Image (cartoon, rainbow, N blue to C red; front, top):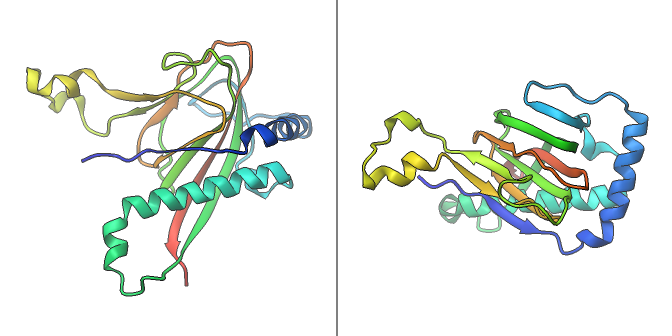
Length: 206
């Protein structure tokens, strides 16, 4: 069955980018230690409570991300929403955790998932113009076993294409189901690759 990946662009990104970069620089000065994870390589990763920090630009991005989570959830669950008796029902987006990553040259994140929530995301704050599918992209691994695919013409695409790639672009937000294995390709460029990630659950408002 198909897996939906939401793709959104923040029209206000250029207006708030510099404020975000200044905030991240100040954050690193206050928090010298990066989170260490087996999936991390050559990068700085913040703590997981970024959405609780005080920053106007950051709050604006977190709100943009929350609206993206809600839009993807409504799209995925459209047939279930249509069956609800209360057509004016509202939903709550709970950001469970959020963080930023600043990649040094060649930095990358190995394949992993975020199983403690329903949806995950990446928001690209800064990347160079030299990004492409092989340089700094986000990739998703297909959620079924490669060994079960038959090697004839009918199964060729599934046998040869084990991952989907999305180009990193400033102001772009990607949202996906948290159980999908994903990672980032190393970025070799003049600018640091800087992103915001978050995990969320969506529930019916009570």
